[in-house]
Structure formats: structure tokens, C-alpha cells
Image 1: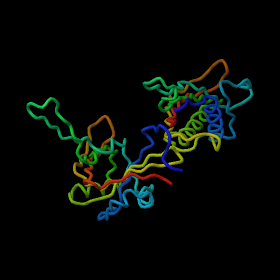
Image 2: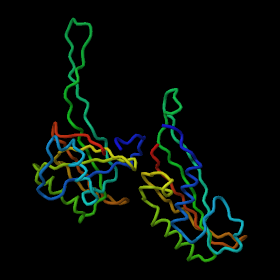
Image 3: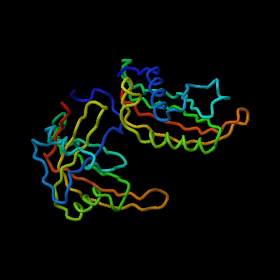
Image 4: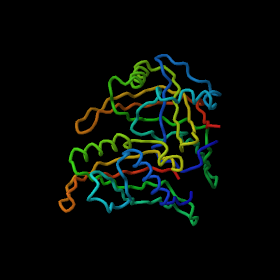
Length: 137
Length: 164
């Protein structure tokens, strides 16, 4: 099967996260206005990789299991924990349409709640989660 | 809609077991008919398994060799459907696990099992009639307790179907 488009993944992740945590703003990579917003989320996509099987045909590829990191930023520790719970409840073990009508089907979303931390420079609590998607291709 | 036309993640497969303690298994024709199979592949019939094992048909071959003849010959025979050894997280009150435990205790109950796999739009079904043999609880510490059971399909009683 053909190579999936990372741009499609990015749109779907942005849509899905925003719909879970609304009205908390969601950004790709970073938020310039971190000093004025008490709660926000950023995400980063990585490990987009479909295994390539034997043969000379470029289309002979397997399923994709990309990971996106979700970083929760809040001024209050309690908020960070509650938002992370919101994402866990919605996303962990989810199977179905991902990213709204223009998204795609995922067989599984697997969320790994990694750690929480505090950034003294910007004065924000953080929770870092990894989410792995199983995407038929 | 037809067959899924994608490479599917293993996670897209689910196992269903026909309900009630004394089921009437589907006929061979019904096992290959999507309407009758899909009617049983519903959430209340879902068996919560850790993973769906390999399913389909076994390899079966008769080998012949005759002294003095240059080559031996391997002739495929009608192969039986594959037995499935399944691991499920053990909840002693799980209704579907209790049904399967009852099957293993009885030993002669034929039940229809269905494995479905979907790409989100289309679904393929593998349905078969089988009896539960092994039923063990693995309660070793360090992990969740597991119920391990084996389903042995009856010969010639299985079928493939898909959404239309």
C-alpha cells in the first residue's frame, strides 16, 4: 500500500486533541503566548514509519504506528492532572475515526502517561504523554 | 463496500461467541452468510481477549515415497480449521467467560464463534463452530490473572464472509 501523508496525520491530531480538550487551545510545537495563557497544549509528531517489505515495489509497505507527544502546560498542578485525565479517558484504547470527517480510521490509540514536571523559567506545570496510533494502510 | 482493502493492524480483529448456555450453532451455509454472522458479531457477544490468535486452516499433507521412484510426492489433504488457544484477562463474573467455562465443563456443546476484522469501513468475518476444551486460570503474581482456553473447531464447519 502507498505511503501515508504526515500532513494528514498532523491535521487529524490537531483536530482530535482540540475536540477532546476544548476550550483549551492546542498548538503544534510551541505557543508564543505562553506567558498570558493559563492552560494550553502542544503536540509533536514523531516515528512516522511504515515497515517496507521485501520486493522492488515501493508500494509494498505495512501499517504505520506513529507516535505523537502531548505536552500539557498549566499554571496549576491540579489543572495539569485533570487535563491529562481528560485525554487519557478519551484517547487511551480508542478505536474508530480519528481527526473528524476528513481524518482516518485508527485500529487503536495507546496513551502512555510519561511524567509530570515543572518549568521554572516559564512558571508552568507540565504533563508529558505519548500516544501511539495503529493506522491501517 | 466489500472486503477491507488495506493492511490491517492486528488490533483490528475481535472475537465473538454466540450467547446462552445452550446455543444452536449456525449451519455451514449460514457461517458463510454475512447477514447471519454479523447478527452475532455485536458488542454484547464480544469476548475480551488479550489478542486474537492465528485463525484459518491447518496445514495438512500426505507424503508418499516409493522405493525406486525418483521423487516423493506431497499431496495436500482437506485441512481442518485451526484450533485457537486464547488468553483473556480473568474476571470471574464476565458473562462470556462463564459461558465458555460452562462449555469446557460440559465438553459437547457446539457454539458458533466469529472473528471479525475491520478497516473502519468494511469488515471481514471468519465464523466457525467449535467446542471449548482447555480452560485454565493462570493466577501467577506480577501480572493480571488470565483465563486460558482452547477452542477446537469442528471439521468442515466454518466460513468466510464480508460486508456488502
